Amino acid sequence: MADVPIAVATPAGSGESGAERLMRYARLGTLSLASLPPLSLYVHLPWCLKKCPYCDFNSHERAGDADHGRYLDALCADLEAALPHIWGRRVHTVFIGGGTPSLFSPASIDRLIADIRARVPLQSDCEITLEANPGTFERDRFRGYRAAGVTRLSVGVQSFNDASLRALGRVHDAEQARAAVQEACAAFDTFNLDLMYALPGQSLAEFEQDLAQALAFEPPHLSIYQLTIEPQTVFAKHPPALPDEDTAFDMLDLVCARTEAAGLRRYEVSAFAREGHRCQHNLNYWQFGDYLGIGAGAHSKLSFAHRVVRQQRWREPGAYMTRALQGQPWASDVEVSRGELPFEFMLNATRLRDGFELERYAQRTGLPLSGLQPRLRQACERGLITLAPGRVVPTARGFDLLSDLQAMFLPAHVARGTGGGAPA
Image (cartoon, rainbow, N blue to C red; front, side, top):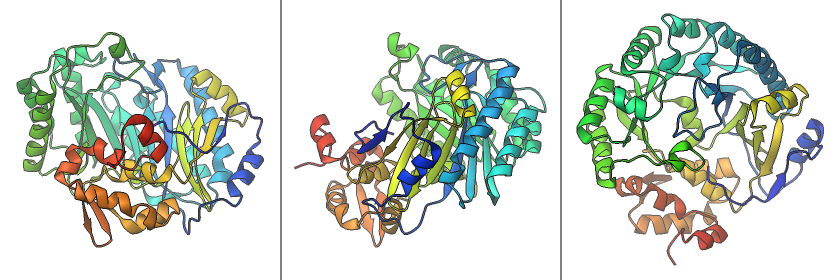
């Protein structure tokens, strides 16, 4: 999510109690949400065997099992402190991400899911996803996660090429990647395979081999991401030689052609799925649903009758555990202003191939459609979207120029400062 100015912020160390925070959320405000959106739960497990040089997520070198136990205690305390903010709401999806969650044993994941079930009501068909790294793969480990209650696995393969995996700093090799995907196929009815492209020194032919190997497993869901150089990473300080832009576009064109032939439909910018296997958790993000994030550095987006709030937990695992066990897991929270909401909504909704219903915009933001329509007309005139009755759908051009489309909905003061936004 873009870092843009927010109207009201409560910083860390404000001394605000949980009850005072809830009272602030419940006050009258400028929005009017007739109903609350679906709610998801995100759980962050922050440790990895080794931090990859391209990674800008909140991940840290591996901790000991004793820390795992204390961390699970902290997650419990965090969830209990958050309960008043989501009271009476049912959780539709759970996503356990990281870091490398598969560093935690099946017994630990079983405890985590049991702790969640004991505190919040889950939908009967609740999707529970766990991220897994082939570098932590052991035979029957995935079956242990399935027995613990995980319904969907997301396997971070990234590549099946040993040279590419070394260039990415991954801790697994191609043989481990293939074994992990085979085990996921055997243990789960649905799973996701993560693949990256435009890797250091990667040729189109090498990526074609990676993609062919991935599709040979007939995965029900495939997520494909272009390697980008993020600030504050090792690659930002020591940039590798990446394929040029034309080669990267050729790789993406190859993905679109081969996945369609394999029966995987592109339903989001980077996500391809067979019928019935879309990731419901991510769909809730893109449809501007709500999510409660617990764990070190986790983010939340929560709606109330008169406001939309974003929260962040303490980022460093040690500080997070201490604060969460004291009942104060929040490092900060912000109230999203009326001026920011159109961009926040469109930043997510335009990622979906099928677009969104106009009615959803009003429901999820509490704002009238009249404020959005002039920019929608401009986007339509530029060929970036089509306006069907009651629906907005990105065109093929809009998908290719997604950043340009999203920038058209930036708040005016941000657009002026960045040179983005709609044309005059």
